[in-house]
Each structure stands twice: as structure tokens, then as C-alpha cells.
Length: 302
Ligand code: BG6
Image (cartoon, rainbow, N blue to C red; front, side, top):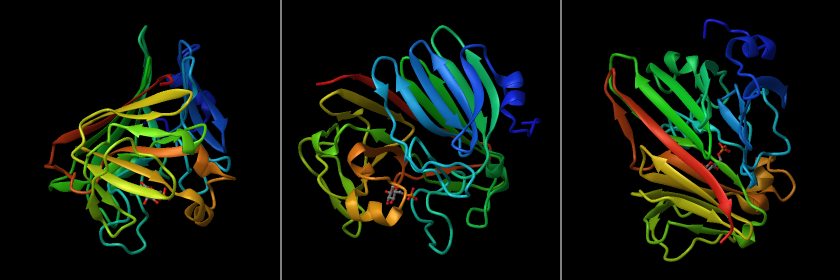
């Protein structure tokens, strides 16, 4: 973090790895491009947001808005935004940004490495150390992104302050699907969820989840892998360090209100977010740390 330049060439000199990890300008900002065998990932330094993950032989796994633009002061829609240190609206409401304050912050590389198994980059968010008017604490926040057979994200928070704090968060993954009408979400059968579209009512549903309208659910008490299955492939998401998963699709009317979903974007995406949300709150005493992990893999269809 000593070098605060965002020049891709300077970053490449310091953190680049020949044929495995380079820096470039893309979508109006600086990105790291990782490759490993046939897999590829693109990570924006703004928000440490993974924008693209091409799994070896299975194509692009993530959905990204066609209007994605870095450096506008607004969070980019798509890929894997990091929501931290609160998930959803701030508990006290007001003008505080939804999903915390690090999505639009500049993160910096801390280390990069490659081996026969993976190519990896670790990024840190200096703004987390300074806190926020709505979250007056100090933390070291790092995201390590590991590209190998799978894409693995480790989001680690260490309390560097002098008092305890509470934390909710998410790796807000936007997955790409060919057609939402043909998607089964597996692994959520009979798991309790908070229905955010029904005043937070607690519900369960048997069988695979099908999406045929707006959906906004926080599943609670989950420990299993969740799979997005469509005609072409299965995307499996394993989560560690949490017991909640958020399922979200804005459908037609909310997409129009959001304004950055693109033409029929809602048909091509589904958010399945590895999260500490709802009753799944992390509390850290000074010096303690916690890691939220998402392991994402793609295989051929059903
Ligand atoms: C989801 C929430 O995680 O994110 C939704 O459950 C929210 O309620 C969605 O609308 C998108 O949030 P944002 O801030 O990126 O528009």
C-alpha cells in the first residue's frame, strides 16, 4: 500500500506475474486480470469487485451490467460487489449508503502469488481503517481472490480498534444464467427465509426454487452448498463463515427503477449472495478477526 499510484504499468511492475497477472484500464478504472490454465478473472481496484470469472470450459459465470462504469461514485452493478460493514439499508436508515461504504472505495494490492494450483491477489481497503460516520470503528479489511479450479474469495475483517463492533456483510454475487425461466436453485429446500418483499415474514418452501417474479430473500441457518442449475451448466456456491444466503432478482419493475440493469438484464442474472445477514451478525472484540468465504465452481448441466 506504500505505492498509491493507480497506474497499471507501475502496479504491474510491483505486483504483476508474467502470463498470470497483469493490470489494465477497463470500464473507466484500473483492473487486475488473473489467469490460470483456462480460467480467467477480472478484478476492479474500486471496491475489490470481481467483474468477470470465466471458468475453464464453462464460459462467463458472472453477470455484469452493460452500463458498468468505474469511478462514477456509484457502485457498479454486477460481478461480486463487497457489501461491508452493513448489509442492506443502514439499521438507522437516513442517508447512509445501502450495503455499507466500501463498494465505491479504492482498494490496493497487498500481495500476489502463483503456483501450480492457483493465481491469487490480496487487496486491502484503507477506508475500513478510518470507519464511517455511520460506523465509527476501525478495521483491517482484506479480500483475497484465488483463481484455480474454482474461484474462491476470502473476505477477512480484523478489529483494529479499542471497542467491540458488530458486522453484517455480503459477497453480493451476480451469476449469469441463459434464461431465468429455466433456472432451478437447489439446496434451499425447507430452509427458513426472511421474505424482504413481505414485511420480513419468516417462511419456508419445499423443492427447488424457481424465479418467476421479483424475489428478495435472506435464507437463515444454511450450511449446505447452493447450486444454480440451468440447461447448460451448474454453478455451485459453497459458503464458509456464515449461515445466511441472499437470493435476489429485481424482475421488471424494480429493474426499471434501478436504471442500470440493461435491456432484459433480469432474465440473464440471479444474485446468490454469501452473507452474514438477518440474525447472522458477527461480533468482533478488539484484535479478533473473521473470514467470510465463497467458493464458486461451474460444471456441465444436469
Ligand atoms: C440485495 C438486497 O442484496 O441487493 C436487495 O437484498 C437490494 O434488497 C439489492 O435491492 C441491490 O442493492 P443495491 O444497493 O446494489 O441496488
